[in-house]
Image (cartoon, rainbow, N blue to C red; front, side):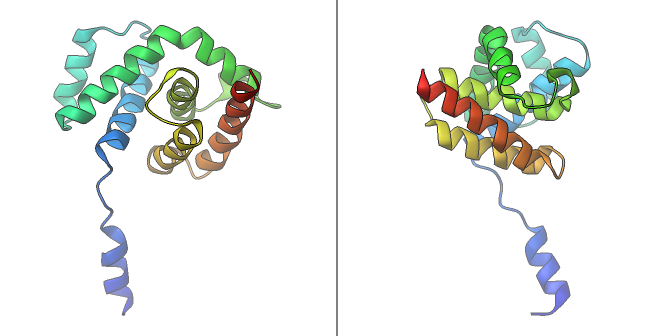
Length: 153
């Protein structure tokens, strides 16, 4: 296979699953809210977001469920993340990484629809698409500590 065909084949990425698409949308919504200094999650803000980000109904509903759950449990989620950071402050986290961590921490601590290790794997995949080059391994380490602490309780 020549290099042109190889590049063409590698550039065709498979579309994310509806749940992963929902997770990515949730992170994008949370990121946008944080950048704008917004803390409140309203149906109106979600509606405005969906006008900008097209996605299938299932992914949209799943993302909205995640966002509302994260907003409801945010103090506990942020505390779990802060407790798992080593030699790093919560405020220094990149906004994208912080919101990927919030999503996965919510799924580990509060969601019944996914096992903890699967939540970590999903977060790593979202980090590969939305975060920096270092995000996947950084997020993996923090989430592993959160999962271990959760399993010990």
